[in-house]
Image: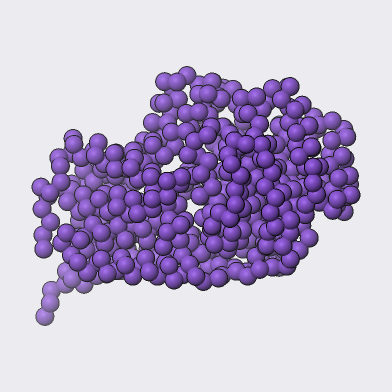
Length: 513
């Protein structure tokens, strides 16, 4: 059955419609959680791609779809750059538009590659929608996740943390889920012409539900008591001298208000270097740890000498008088934590302190807390599941203690009380799904929460409130395929789909005897 090119609007109307469709796609993610919207908007996108007359038209369509998606999804960057960074409003809006435009180039590139392969191989619409496009979609999102340090925020797989496709996370991770979502969307896009792909879509979703029942990891040791502190320090005041004094007092009081096996503060809860602290500050925490049997994970910038300072977590245990543990953030935020080459002028226009950190090692040991091993990650780092899984795999391979709990320490007050908070919580849910481990989240303004090893938010504090989340937490050990293979399984499957498509088209093109 043929596909008519006249069944979609002309390009001048199609592009704004594509941008609007991309913007609607944001409602599939937290806090809305309407995951079927992601499949439907992507299906509409594929429906149009099948019918576009040229590769150029398809690339523009992909760019517009992604532009609307990113611009609507990360509008909250305006608050950090303008309200807290002091960047002029027009320049802030331009920066967000430029970010959305650059992210759109990834989708445009992947779309153009898929259409070019379809034309070169003379592939049918069926093969394009069910193999070529899903493979290129997964590869494109993976590329966006690491090229130029990566920006995988709002990658399509995150929409499915509470949907049937969540079961695939321990196998192929968030990028693999994105490719599977594209496959389901391709099935839906073909419905006007073909009915059988609908059966395939149902089977894929049902298999995801079945996989979600598999327990890849098992409880390890005894549960520990945990207290997660949410200080709710206003971002606009955080680095004022008066507020720094208040923050030091606030967090030592919150820490010492009750004992727990693990007490965790947010990222940079202490907003000054350890060398600038009062001489009795850390000893006072160490005394409390020793007397109460508590372990403390304290967020603080740490210096090792001139021009070398890290965004760190120091661990204070009952057995030591000095910090016995240190974790340094290794995946830094462009502009906020390091200055990309050629952009010093842009950073100098903003009033954001501590803008050029030193990277920590790629593999770092977890923090021992009784029967459990706690691996921190700081704010933006939990967007990179392959790096967290890689740390778990590296320690397992070396026969060293491997984390049984993940701990995210964040301060995203930079983005106000916006959808950035639940979006970041959803990202942490994906990390639990991929690794089969609980994720603890200690944040300044939210979302402070406990996520179980199946990616379900067990309990969380009300955002923008000063409170403590006290919960018992059971650690988990074991491995998932994603821990062992990272994104390699997704890459092999995507490339295999392309190779199979090439073979099938070549076979069909041979003269038959």
